[in-house]
Length: 409
Image (tube, rainbow, N blue to C red; front, side, top):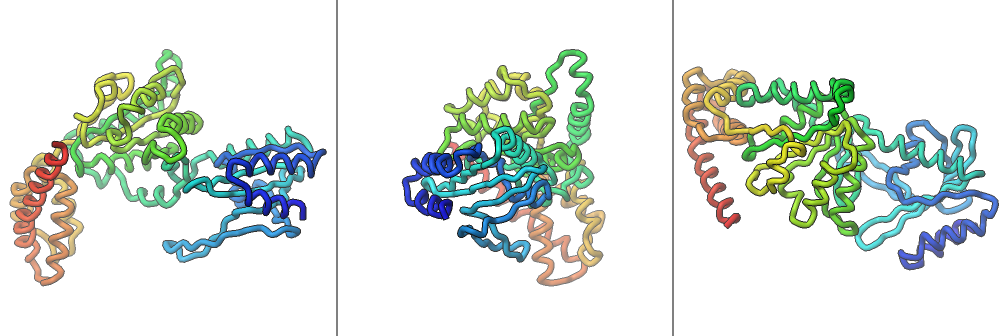
């Protein structure tokens, strides 16, 4: 009951006092026990136990608070622990774990206390749990709001992205693949010739021309751990703190791929210098491939866009020329049911009419036309619908361009 009273009383204190009070009380209640205190998010005891690396049992002598959630995508109920005490069996050792959580502003803080017969056992157990949870397995590690989060759903969502269903200008697709394949296969060669085994790649081009698809296809093909950064912003940490977290995790996960999509929106005058120091400073980034994308290269500082030691490979994703549009439209046409199918003459005509279209607009041309066709279900009617739809989409493109220029001004 002492532990239950401890939890109840601690949660009535101010957030600044809770962790110290709990530590002080545990030291008094268990004077012969060694204990380790942590708020490291990598210490996910329940995940570690689910993988059968230890056995856990809730202490039924106290009230253990469990929250219930609903996963609508999987149509299932799940539970997670808020405040509880666990009895743990691990490698012949018996440990007690106290888990507590409370709100600090809009964020949830989670603390764990590991009680063991010796500090060595506590530290070994803590390291084992954190090390296992830090590994990336069939998931993407996503950084947002100052924290890393494993996202298996995002990993599964990109599995259909391959280079086979990607059309790019001339040899661009093969050049990018060869670059990354050779890099990851050449670790010993880099070491033998004392060349830093790291790589910075910058994808440049207007929206809708294959940058994101290429990143997804690379992640699938390289089979290396992938870390994806959504933002360096968070409420309770500076950009510099978060940039340090990102690169520290990348170094721990190396060899790996670190993705910075829309890098021009991630960096500003305040955080740019710190970012560049982490990317290309004294710290070793061995085995890290940093892939950044931008729709607006003019917004990037020259220290990023022009200095080769930071992003030493730059690939330009231009609007598809005639051969690429023809290949893309033909590929789509081959997937259509016969009643929808386009004639060779119609394919050639649409290729001519869509000069200046991005791949994204070509895709929208097919999708919007197919939806309109389903209103008639008339064999051969898709050709006329697509030709009229070209004019509508071109007008949208013009409006979008004007709006973008007005926003920049």
